Length: 342
Image (tube, rainbow, N blue to C red; front, side, top):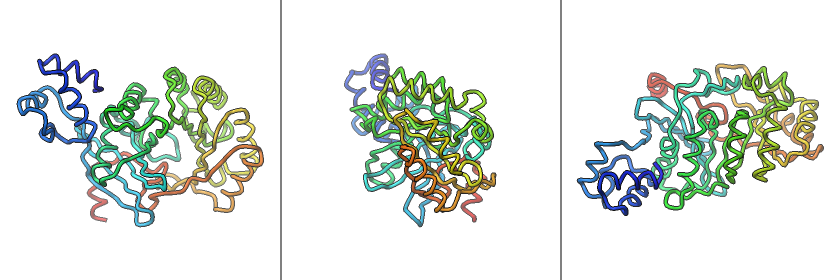
C-alpha cells in the first residue's frame, strides 16, 4: 500500500490519520512484523495483524563472493516460492538487483531465469522488501536499483509502476528514479505504456542481437515484436521522455560477436540517443553458450565506437556464486538444501 491507501485504511478502522504516516515509515524501513512498530499502540498492531500481513522476504541462503564481495540472497516469499536478489558494491555506493517475478515467461535461451517458466508476479511490496532486507542486513543505504533480476518487469506492469512510486516516495526509501534502471526483453506494449508515465528512470533494452534471425533464435519475444517494432517503440519513448536508452548486448561466441554484427548493430541504433552495455555471456549449465575471449570483446567495443556508438563492457560481479547477469533462476528448497551440502 502507498501512503494514501494506508491513510484510507487507518480512517476506515477509526484511527487518527497521523498513524498512517507512522505505519508507512515502519513498512518502508523493512520491519518483519507489526510487533516491531514500537510507537504504534498494541491494540492497533493486533488489529493490523488480523486484517493484513507484511509482504516480507525471508532469507533462505546468503552467498558472498570471494572474488568481489557481491552478495546473493535466496528469499522465501509468504507462499513458499523462492526468488533471488543480488547486492553489489561500486565506488559510487551500493546497488541492488531485484527480481520482479517468480520465474519468467520470456524464455530467452541464454538466461537461467526462464528455464521453468513463470509461476507468479511479485507484488510491489515484495520488490521493495528485497531492498529493505539487504539494507538492514548490511547496515547500509542502497543508492541504486536495477530491475534486472528474475522476471520481466513490463510483464508485471502495474506492480512495477507501484514499486517505482513506493521506492521513490519522499516519506520512504526516497531513492531517486534517476538511480533506477528497468530492464525489458522488448515488451513493446509495455514500453508504450511506460512512456505515458514519463518517469526519469533508465530504460534498459535487452537487445542481444543485430538482426531478427539471430534475435528470434535466442529470444522468442522477437517473434511477436521484432527489432524494427522494438526500436520504433524506443524512439517514441525517447521522444516523450528525452532520456538516453541503454541497450544490453550479451556477447555470445560465434553467435553475435563478429565485426559484421557490430557494424549491423551500429547501423540499427543510429539516430537513437543510447549507450550499449556489452555483457560477456555468463555460463548457464543448461545451455552451451560461451563468452568470446577478452580480445574479441574489446574489438567488438572498438568497432561500435568507430561507428559513433558509445559502448562499455560490463564488469562481471559474483561469478563464483552464480550471481551475474542471466544466472539468477527459480529454485526449489531441495536445491537449496543440496547447495548447503555441496
